[in-house]
Image (tube, rainbow, N blue to C red; front, side, top):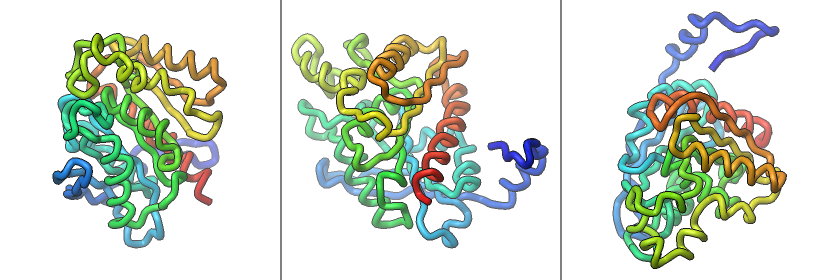
Length: 276
């Protein structure tokens, strides 16, 4: 994060010193899912001055296919500094390796829409000093988690006020044989209605202009680049305001580590504007 004073950028050394003077706390918590009858872990990042704050906004981060709740903090440790700097909480949820954050009709042990948007949010609000309103919550994620963040925020606009996606699989239909999606939705040839109903690009009818703050980005070398551009075009067609960012990069942790800085700044600005 860069701070601006009278139009001038503070020297980088001063910014780094301001971070060094504080140290965010990173905890692993164990939650329980009633709907799936199992314990699920999450990483919770709280700013150093948590005890001095009355209530904090929360950003929920969703990992990609094959990863888990530890993924974000491992390749993007600087999110701790941002949490400190912006006085916010970050919760890295677990979505199993292949849930796509959907309540599966074919697998009762994969009910991650309910877990993330109801059970986990409830746990965090009960155990931490959070802003217990949609204006105090944002959700974003990478790849499978990018799909998940938009999917959950579209369906639960009473829970989230802002949402994002980086390198997100925002249209799953072109990839019927990839990433174990058939284990969640059923084979495309046999259950096409599940795929059509649960792909983000077909869910834009749920949106009302200006109700949900949106930021979407994808690298130009990413295999999801085309579907993200298609989503951008559809949002424009429907007059849904959103930030859309493309820059060189592929489906890599380096891209996501850089991307999250812009997304967290977007959410910070949203929280400041909506929680006065």
